[in-house]
Length: 87
Image 1 (cartoon, rainbow, N blue to C red):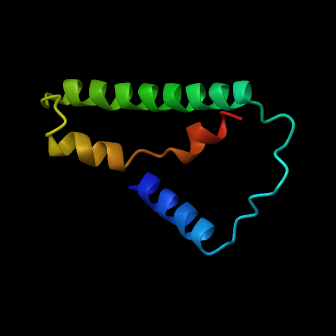
Image 2 (image 1 turned 60 degrees about the horizontal axis):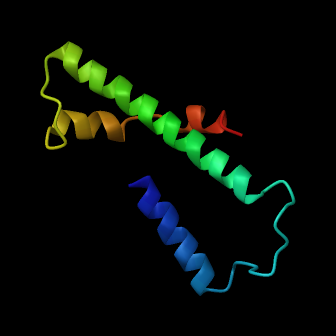
């Protein structure tokens, strides 16, 4: 849900010309650094998802993508704290 909103905001900004496509990319933002950030983001999501799954198991719920309890727990995840520690 948040990803969709962010993507929508980005698309909207690009279409309205609010993005400076000629802006200089910082020197530290190399392809390797972007891959490192991406890996860390995925690691955080994997760890958080693993915790939610462990909670489901401990609570006796079925671990399934169709399980509404799983969906609700994933929506309630606080991503801001763990994601800020990546950089």
